[in-house]
Length: 321
Length: 292
Image (cartoon, rainbow over all chains, first blue to last red; front, side, top):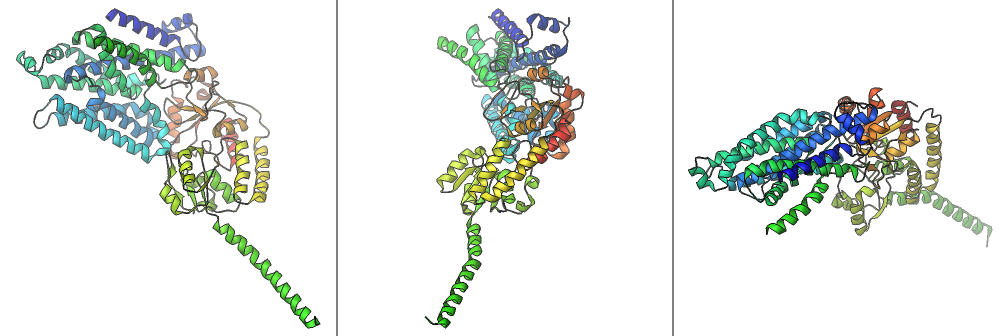
């Protein structure tokens, strides 16, 4: 299964580098990627546009896949995704606040998305870890839904207050990769690295948590602490992903289910790396389709992710049931 | 009939004719006063002003009241919001007999018509469309002659503004800010003006009924535009920061426009939404952006 995902990832990466609105010979693409030559517009197209965009697609896809996997594991909830801990709502509000109210500060969009995404998650954790039943799954999910509603309402309010500026925000809301070079990754790589590292440390604790809180506790684990760690990791990964590519909720929800069903195991040692590979391959493939199907027009990537992901998901679901 | 009676009859008839002659303009004036026109677009509002007709309300325009003729700046403003346009209760309270609207408010236009209000969409997306709509507005408000005279002046000024083009630079005109901007196509207001100013619009061959389309940056790099003009929804004080941001865009930094410092930001919306100052806008595009 992992081998199949690696092949899918390589195919998607190759297609993302080789295909675009402008035809560049494969040999030239290879030379440019390997730093062996190329010049002029083709060099700029491959080196400054396609390469950073492909790397961003892989990073964002992997981040969202992992974020979804650890949240579903930590909350024992098949519907868990970065939406559930408020990250998506917060990131959306931060980005749209800058785009609409401070257009001259547009370079701050990724920073604002990251900051507000993390703020939303921090508020969710604060509420979920206060009062009785601290850190319980129910409290986290309910606090997350409340925070998502709050930030979504604030975003809607902003859009309604500045209707003439709303078009600038649409692409962020729809979600999609852009040709911002390495800017997005330059801002977010520490958060992606920290979130990924934390996720790697959570593999065994999450497997213990899957046995139930009581069993996990009897094995020496602290379920609320594991959930907090999973939440922090998912928040870092999802906020960084939103800062780069806007709101792509579908990926974090579906990819972990697909790899779980296809792999026939719910072990996090398999699900987390497989979700990273699957998410990266899906987003890179979908983005390639989005920018080539109606070239030179670029379409939002969201519908293409659904187009690629849902049939596989439904097929696996049918087999599983 | 005696001479005296004939004289009295003639005097009476003369007085009657004089009375009719005196009262007729007042009657016409009263008729004009009864026309209650709402102009939701700056184009319609300014055309009415040029025709000597004052609307009872104007729509809130992009970029504030600066785009409105001084003659209608004191007219009450109706706020517009998607997807209806004006608040229908506020509009109904004004008892309009005619609303000059836009296709943007198609949903609202149907609702207005359902309320028994006559609606005409007058928000052109091209210069020929603007000329045609000018006449149609004149026709709708009973000022055909004034509209014909206005058209003559507009055509002459536009021809003068278009004349003497020395170069045809490749121009990319974009809507919005950020790394996902939409390009103006030839069937947009801005696209029509750029072509009239002698620019060759960079679109990558994309088409769209809306007049805008998000095109691949790869096409922009390959087309290598001489001039990039951005039309963001922003304020004038944002122009320097936005210009710097666009010039640093990784996708465009290698274009001739960026290298020669020919990246501009226009925030007054004259390229986004039709206006009546067509010749002046063409002249400004040529002088400030195209240098041709």
